[in-house]
Length: 514
Ligand SMILES: C=Cc1c2[nH]c(c1C)Cc1[nH]c(c(CCC(=O)O)c1C)Cc1[nH]c(c(C)c1CCC(=O)O)Cc1[nH]c(c(C)c1C=C)C2
Image (cartoon, rainbow, N blue to C red; front, side, top):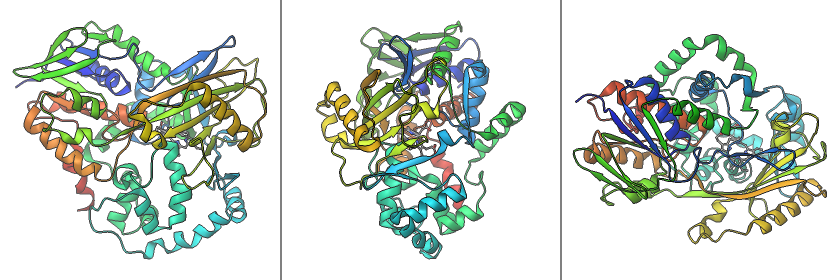
């Protein structure tokens, strides 16, 4: 069997768009590529909007990209090929205004260690809970490792190897700032994979951190891809060695828009919005039913959330794992104040751990956008821009009923929180309030084992007809999503007639600690 020559990609978020982009680059130009998006726009959770008379830029989804790791290099290669470098805004590793991070615990803003030795020591010695954490870090190398391939919650892992308070205070804050999730539900293996691997291989996280090297846990395919990207972009990538974060003049959405514009220029690519897929039928080829039409494909790449894919498959009991993990919804409240300096501290923002005693509005954290990305608005005016993020796993009980708090209430609560936490009493000049529904998938304990079963079930039932990509499987960041779509496309194009599901990593990951 030769490579498929008629692809339909389900979902026009960053994963679906990247899959189409890589196909358009590497597949023969006779290959037909159709992207179907259910909503009226492409980009998924990536949403950058300019608001008001002064066209202030507000980010409702991801707001920065990181250049590090293999995903970082792959995205930078894409950014370069899409001619986005002239619009790029970078923050360097030594920029104080952007790098310091804080938590709100128990009732005040506390700076986290990690930027400079001196300031780290100061924050450790002035905060009792940080000081108390030191012995558990020193003793970690002497704690017996878990049995091989044992998955557990983040809270169980961190409490077992370090201490309950490190988990409840520091790690739960961190998990709010990445997954908006609950440390008592999320899998250590699939969220903090590096920590998990270090314990598995070295018997201790601290020993592993001291002894391992950066590329140790990369698969052969990742090492190969990294080498190719690095060799092709050597001079260009070296510019980013001192960059910690970057975005674009008009925000992160410039990336998804640039992919869309590039695809629109390709004769073999079609992009359709307002095409909600309702059903898939598998036969000699695949029939894709939407509210608008019926399409046919040799091969379907699903970049939909796993539960959305589950709902359109013909046999529900074949791939039950698609329906296991929930996603959380996050309320984003963007505010812009006409004053340049109303924040009491400089930094990226602060997070609120699950253990913070009084958090009635379920705030996850606050990003100080004007510190992290100061140059996205008109230079003649200076604003303080903040984004308050609420909900996440705290919204779980209401997300099924779609009974989220009203926007006016969220705005009022945010203003109240900023008075209490930061002493801000001014009225914002501009604001934007929204709820990003089901935006972050939650990898619950056992995720890795479920992916393994899913891989073989797709192989058995939908071989050469269906593969999957997107944030539901191997990482939620933009870097992960682009990287996984790139790998999927390269695998499909180079491995035919072998079956490619998008979950091949389950077959090779264990090689690291054998
Ligand atoms: C307050 C809630 C949130 C903040 N950001 C997010 C939420 C839910 C979403 C988010 N943050 C990160 C990712 C991963 C993908 C990515 O784009 O890189 C997602 C989906 C990255 C991230 N944010 C923080 C950390 C430690 C990381 C991991 C990478 C890194 O080390 O930079 C911290 C953080 N997030 C938020 C704040 C206020 C904050 C720190 C003070 C907001």
